[in-house]
Every structure is written in C-alpha cells, then in structure tokens.
Length: 351
Image (cartoon, rainbow, N blue to C red; front, side):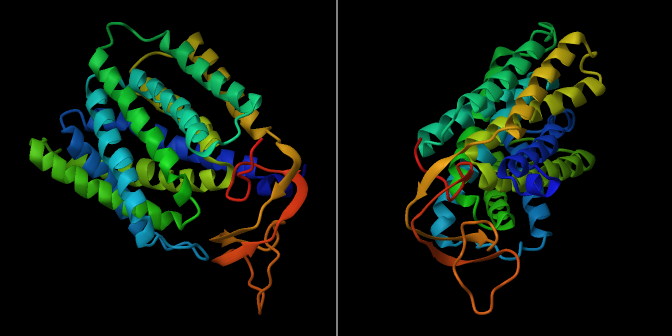
C-alpha cells in the first residue's frame, strides 16, 4: 500500500486523529490535577469548557461542512450535560482525591464503556481484531496499575468518581456520533459553550471555589487544547471509522497522562511501565493494520454531509463540478461492491 493510499485509508486516518485527540487530552490530566487542586469540581468543568468554547470560536469554519441547526439542539444539550458538566465535574472531584497517575490510568475505562455503548446503540461490528486491540489496551492499564502505591493518597471514593466520569464521557462519545458529520468547529463550540454555562451555574449554586489568576489561565488553555481541539479530532476520527474504534484508540490518552505524571515526579519509571506501554502500543498497531473487506450492499440513502467525488461513493453530478469537499443534501442509489470499509456514515450494514 502506497503512502498516498494509506493517507486515504479510513483506518489510518481515523487512528491518527484518535491518537492526536488522545495526546491532547492525556497531557491535561496531571495539569488539571496540579492547578485545580483547590478549585471546585463544577468551577473546574466550567473553566475547561469555557476554554474549549473560546478556542473553537477563534477557528475559522471548516469549508464544505454542514452546520448544526435547531434540530440538533436537543442532542447537543444532552451531550453537554453528560460530557461537559457531569463527567468533568466527577473527574475533577475524583482527581483531587486520588493521584494523577492512578486517575490517568483509570481513564482506560472510557474506551471499554464506549465500545460497549457503540455496540449497544449503533450495532457497530466489533471483530476479533478490535476486541483484541481493546483487550491489549486494558491489559496495559492493568499492568501499570500494579505499580500503584497503596499509600499514594488515593481514596476509594475518588477513584469511583473518576470511573463515573469515564462513563459520562463514554455516553457523550456515543451520543455525539450522529453529530460527527457536521462541522466539527460548530459542534465543539455549542457543546462547550452550553457545558461551560451550565457548569458555571452549578458552581455558583453549590458555592464552588474559583482559582487564582495563574491557575485560571492554565485551566482555560487546558480546555482549549485538551477538551476543545481534542474533541474536534475525536469527531473527525468518529466520522472516519466509527465510535467503537475511536474510543478504543483514544485509550492511548491515559498512558500519555501517566507518563507526564511520572515526569512531574508522581512515580519513577519501571519495567512495569515499559510492559504496559508495549501492550498499549500493540493495541494501536492492531488498529492501524486493521483491514475489513467483503462484498456488501448499499441501500438507497439520502442525507447531507461533507463529501468529495473521488471516494467511490459520490457519483452524482454538479454543474459545474466542485473541487474538494463540499456539503449538500444528496441521494445514493443502491450499490453492491467490494472494498475495505469501516462503520462510517455509508457503512452501517449488519454482519
């Protein structure tokens, strides 16, 4: 397979986008732990998503992308409550009561929850390779967890809150899938802005403490990168190869956070870290090497999303023909063919 073909391969594109989202999100965990130590949970969530909204507002709209409309409002509010209010507040509360390393590693549960919910909600096909990749990632987390110090300052309630946060984000990931074909800048902005307003209101009601000016700035930057730009990459990855696979590759994030926590002095490196990292990387490699190829049938379909006319699925005509990605409502006629594919907007058939 040539480099050009790999660049257009949805498995490679989706994996790279999901890993980019994972890196951006992963590095924020120890930073939020350090700078949000004395900040209320809802206040932390409000600042993180205010940063995400601000960062999104500063970006130009993506050309050729369909915009979110009033008919998407209810879903955006639901994902904002789940993923931009409850999940980050639970995570911030738990993070203050557990170590950065332990909390980072527990974020692996988000991938498992997302995989389960994507299968439950959308019946996404999850083959043995995907399950093995996810299992390797979970095993990497378990191996690293063996090195956690029982005297490291964590509490059962703190870790339980972190787990609750991962479930909230997994639900967010799953419910966001139908929004992945819209302009990601628009989706990130409205979700983040809604979450920031609701979290700030909750912080005022419960009397949360707010940070100093320096900590406030750091939390806003963490939000712009780890919760804003990261979400943009995550949405594009979901568009490329589905919710389950994106969630599984996103499981790389906990190890990024754990590595940074080690560098900041949380723990010293060890052979367990090397083994856990190797298992995680093996899972990512499985995703990059995945090839799902069989004869399949496309039923007649009418929808709107950004598309090109050189991808084998969009052969309708324009006068004049546009160049590059563009968006409008269009119809697909029934089609039967063979090619590598993933559970994207055109491949929701059963297996």
